Length: 352
Image (cartoon, rainbow, N blue to C red; front, top):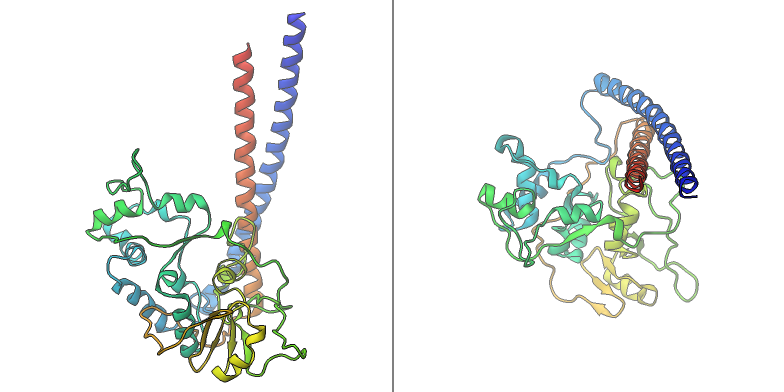
């Protein structure tokens, strides 16, 4: 009887392994197809680069982007300043920045705004701590930035984390710093504006009790930031971009008005705060920011105008991002199937 049970178990394990092998073979085929498609798309983009010089700058790479980084570096003993320094010096210093592979950047460097006044207002609204926040794709990326000993103290002697890097280069981080994890954010669940290259959110305009849109309303702040094409989609593991994740979380339905007077007249339909171009600020319904404007040390860089890059280029870039995202998901599935196969074989050997 025991022999029969042993044979049945063996047949069951063999069938399970055959299914896993079939799954692995199918995934490998799909991965190979994607690899060929990715290569073709990269060749197409490469041809455009060769015939048109350097890469794209669809939202503009103005000098103010470099100024933003320089201003971050001026903030003494900050994690954001250290990260910017490491990114610009790691090649010459021989540093291993593997712990930052999941880091997208600093909030202040991940968007651009077309108007300097609006950039100052939005940066002041968010505040220095948020503007200097480090943005990671996943919780694993957050954990990689900081290591602890058995007593829960931060390890500063580990070179595989941010605090270890600070000791290696003679810089220091004082106090706490904010890290934002994209996969844990409350995401925008609505539609996007049709055929909009920036994938703006299709949020209904505010309405007064009489049904009219308030005078002076310009747009929601989340739609007034410009994103680089690589950050418009397939940034997170679920395929979302930064507008519907990071910036919707930070700005929500913050409204922008031309004047303070018009903003105050629209107070009844302001739920998530508002700014006016002449300096008015409502943090949220019922919380007003009064007094003089602050001179912000770090603000969003400016966009430098329209692009002359054809729409087909961005479509090709978007397809490439999607293919790479799908390829990464398949690679993860292949690892899981292989782990299941190893687990099944190990259990079978153990039972023998």
